[in-house]
Amino acid sequence: MRYQGTNVNVSVPDGVTAIGEEAFKNNTDLEVVSFPASVKTIGKSAFEGCSGLYGVSLPAGLTAVGDNAFAGCTSLTGITIPDTVTSIGESAFRECRAITGATLSASLTAIPDYLFSYCWALSSVTIPDHVKSIGANAFAGCRSLSELTLPDSVETIGYSAFSYCISLSGINLPSPVQTIDWFAFDGCSSLTEIVIPASVTKIGSGAFEDCTSLTTVTMLCRKPDIEGTVFYSTFYGCTALKTVNFAGSQKEWNVLTGGGETPEGVTVHCAAADEPFAITAHPTNVTAKSGDTVKFEVKATGNGLTYQWQLSDDAGKTWRDSSNKTVEYSTTLSDKNNGRYVRCVVTDKYGNAVKSDAASMKIR
Image (cartoon, rainbow, N blue to C red; front, side):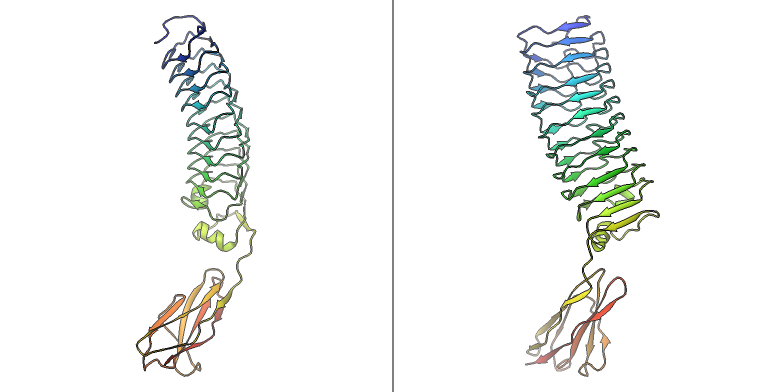
């Protein structure tokens, strides 16, 4: 049932338990609405487009607010959602452009998609302690939001969740965060520093794209799945970026970046030491029957390792390269190679080379 009146002040009668879908939608006369304690649910788009509505006090017994319930209420200046509310629909307060502050129900475990998107005046919001996920575009375009504290329960930051929050100068990413989705902080042009916790396992494409004031990035996560490349996707357009502090080694950083170039003016500091360049396991002598396949293996640590196996038929006096360039050399034992020696030359990315011990193959 839709309200057909033109009153600017409406008191919902006591005993009403639900405000139906689109009950007051696009009622531009409505300025103040009062709810009795009996109201438990507010339906989809119930007050959507009520551009004159500025006074709303949600009842303590309320349990659910539907999709788009107050979307486009452009005169609404603040909202407190009681702790009895366990469900809020998508876009519930989207484009409420006069809202300056919001307090959410402590019973929420997820912030829905587009909840406060394009609430231009929103400068502060309290995220409840048990929230695990921030939905897609939840705060997108909240251009007055300057600081935000996320509770330690948050695990996922959704697609474009804080995109173009142009006043956001600081945000903490709590340790449980595992996923920072595509364009999560895209266009946050006042953000100067970000610490990505060790718990992060996935960073979406463009997650911090066009954060044009970002100067310092600290990555405590050593092996996240990055969609795209670090500098030309994750931090693309971060023109002020000067320093990246990475918790891992140079080898891990090379793997993470796919060997991509570091932009001019950016310095990467790797906190962990690379593995020392050394052979840790040498090939050993093999005795077998003629016709058997014999195998030799070498193990080594270091950065950017390459392998070259060599052969000798004069007990190690002279050596020639084989065609094998892997960690393992195998061949079929015969009279022709009976008594042959093999060894491996291991070279790191800096050109340092070390030879393994020689090992022989003999017919039993």
